[in-house]
Image 1 (cartoon, helix red, strand yellow):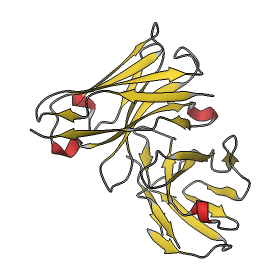
Image 2 (image 1 turned 60 degrees about the horizontal axis):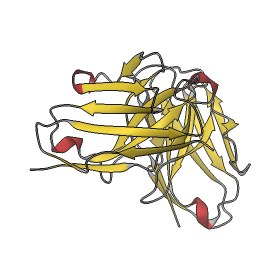
Image 3 (image 1 turned 45 degrees about the horizontal axis):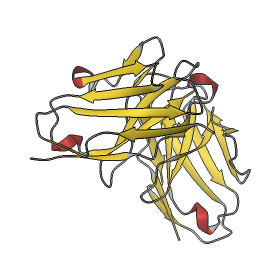
Image 4 (image 1 turned 45 degrees about the vertical axis):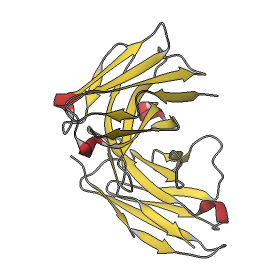
Length: 106
Length: 119
């Protein structure tokens, strides 16, 4: 299985901050990475696919980059509604695997 | 707007079978998408269980493969998950999702349903 390792596991930030979360794959996965946002008690929401493409309706303050084994999710200006847990996922091969999550706290 | 809704028992006895159904609206189960299940134990991360295509083709997580069966019902526009021989470790929120594959990965999620394994 491909391991997806996110860092950091948690971070504290302020409204207006630029935040970057990284995800490293245990082997090369081209650009087959997706990112999801999950708020407490809610289902995850799809943000990004193919490493850098925004899902429909996702604001442009979210951006993704990377290829091969190293990927990142950036939130350009953190807003109160962005405080959540973020997960990366690889869909290059089976089984699909997720990172362990990064909790973004105030 | 695509919507997915899970349904099924919220409590299953150990060694029993967990059975969930996902009703799809706003899209056809026969479209060019995969229909998947993802679970999340309380306070933990996400785990991919497996997926099924309209043709019945499946891909399962090897860690669960011996216990998992998925199926589609085109007449009801829904798909299902059966997980046998459950233990407390299978207690989780179960999500059904639409996966567009390499086109755009997972794009829609159900609201999730908590299944507790307990006697």
